[in-house]
Length: 160
Ligand code: DAT
Image 1 (cartoon, rainbow, N blue to C red):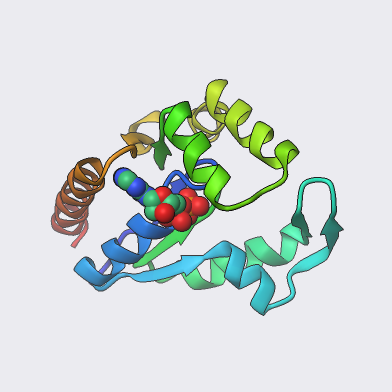
Image 2 (cartoon, rainbow, N blue to C red):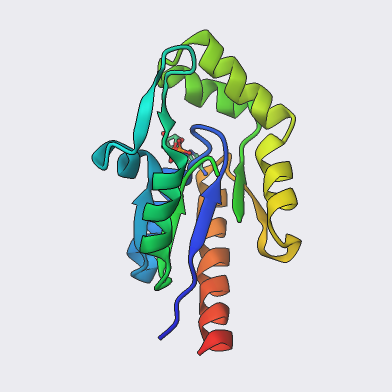
């Protein structure tokens, strides 16, 4: 049976990990967190102290992801077409809890203010496959799960 791949994009703490894991457990699709994939396979060149993140070896990351996605059926969680969005005040509170540096906090808030990831997704992919999802409160998480499960069921019907 052919299965879809699903990518979640969004700035830090919008809820990619929470949604991805729960969706995997409800659908049986495989959840991949790119951050863990990069650390586990050491797919980075060095560490950016200012941005507090590894500088990815993008060719190797893409190769590794393509390998895992070619059969279908994976959910990929990265900043990078379900774009999760959280209001800035909620985002700020969640970011503060993670004790990130002021710079990292401000960069992520700015990224959200300017809707950078959404714009990137719309530029890079066919608009029909990019969906914007609100992610402020638990009810929205539940709605998003329902919506994506329905989307997966329809995709499976259409493609098998
Ligand atoms: P990410 O993987 O995007 O960095 P996360 O899944 O770790 O984010 O979530 C960050 C925090 O926000 C975590 O404490 C769970 C909470 N959260 C996620 N989605 C939520 C939602 N829809 N409503 C309320 N809290 C949410």
